[in-house]
Image 1 (cartoon, rainbow, N blue to C red):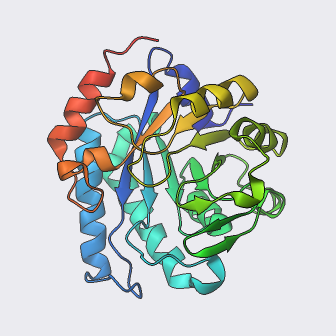
Image 2 (image 1 turned 60 degrees about the vertical axis):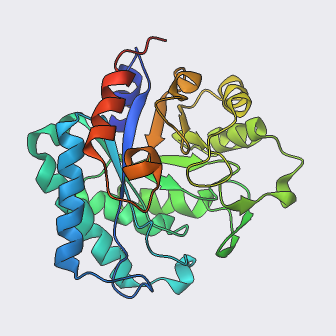
Length: 278
């Protein structure tokens, strides 16, 4: 049985399904934090309202501002609590429109079980996962493969409705230890280990994915294929045969992820993408 997210993506037959990013301001305890939780929630709600008016297909909530990132053993319960508040704030803004959208969450870095728990508690549909199959070295250190423990945790808490979309050959990471495994081979491994979708990226936030990598992944895997970085109005045609696209930096002022969400950019992109034909 298809999960709600994979069903919504499958139903978007004429063009890719579009996710917009909500980069949650730095949470309390993070070095860059400068807002109270009430202010953080207000900013999240304002961005959700912009996306709602633009009729975007889905949203992903991420603690992008919690620099420098730490692995889960150096994170804390406050991050889970605050991300739960952020996700619930999105639900409240979307209202009835929420039923037609796919909502996702990512908790950096590689806090994948924590993201599953937040998704279940808030009724979100999917999580974006790091290091689902094969280990890698990221900015924050070693990242171990997690498919086995993660899927067992999902089953244990009764969250099988939450889809798992995993990055492969993830951005901001070194992959020397898996240099003998192609991106297509990694997609096959993710499918074998029961992922619900795979995400192809460029080298860093805002960097476009190589179209040949996307083609290889689509040839090697039957899973939904998403592109997770570097999407713009100018290059979206290169990825129109993908199942879904995750757009973050392009929706910000001057195309920089650290800037404010630009309502005009979001609206113009959605108007353009609605003209695409596969």
